[in-house]
Length: 376
Image (tube, rainbow, N blue to C red; front, side, top):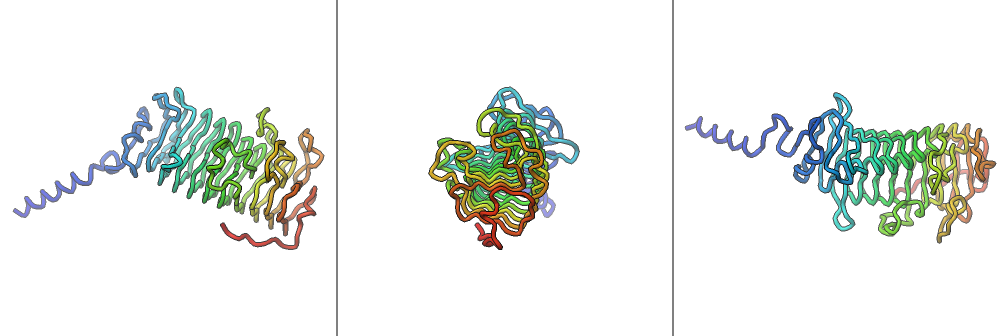
């Protein structure tokens, strides 16, 4: 009798827990080369896990996104044995797209371990997503944005590489409470862009060989169009930028039109009509036009707005040297220097304890000390 009872218990446990011989458990699906990642995502339960083995994956379902996620999910590339590479298939303009709505955010997302390359729009895009992590991915040659948290919140973007394309390697837009930690961006018109967002922490980023290494820009450059008023941080930007290296951003601009086409090659950090930025303990060196530019957005980009001027930006304890040595042929080329400040009617801007040799306008905001970072 005892043996029978033990056997029944073991049978019950086996049925209740599911098999983990091949797929890691009842809530885990493993995808192998030749199989569809999208099919696995569709089959996974909310809160489940999809693990993808090394290989190249080209989806054939014809959807806008190669991989569309609309539920809580862990999507993991098991890349210890080689790349897990997602390439465009027929009709795919987006790589991995996590899509919620204004009224129904997708919650609890992890995307880790993928190489996503060559999509016409975005590589990894979160849209109305909350509580997400994008880690250890390599995303390149997206014609719009490589890694793109948009209208999203409570996110971590860490240990990724973004490169190439015709807009931004990384872009945080209309979002709140996002940490961008230990990433590398290169070879793009803009390495990292942030706008209409609040409580954004950028730490330990390397930006090099871009047209502009880092761009913190005005809402008119948000890319949100008529949805800009739905952004968490509309007119309420706040960015903490620390411990980063922005160097040799001297890529000739590959874009000829629009706002991106107007970007001056050779720029380290561009703060254009952006408010409440704290830039601390970072280096901006060997950028051909300028290490750091603080400017009224409408002066450089045209157009009108109720507030184009940058306000309440603090630039403290940075090294800004070796810049402005080979300026591009632009209408503002004669301003080339380590630091350029053309803040228009902007107020509350401050610089202190920085190292730089040349400047235009920086003396107007130079101070013995700036107010400490007040927190988010």
